[in-house]
Length: 94
Image (spheres, rainbow, N blue to C red):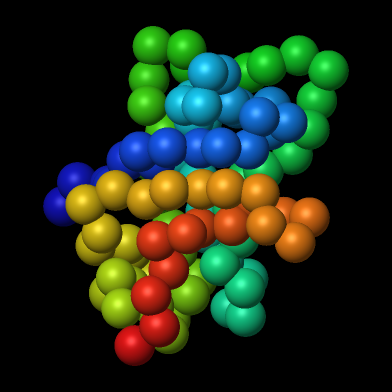
């Protein structure tokens, strides 16, 4: 099974975001009640692997249509800043 890509990340303040692309090797989505990027944090410098595109390593949103056994099955996700958090906009309730 391939991990889905973070196709777009619009959270410029994230330490892993460079030019609207996620460069964390893998992110975790959700805290069981909110589809947020748990990997999001701010830092004075940018990090991650600039040659890599971030992927979804785990999803804790059991109520998401794309979640199968805590693994995201969407072809790709979009992350954006909503309500002071980095949210997965691909989340779709079952």
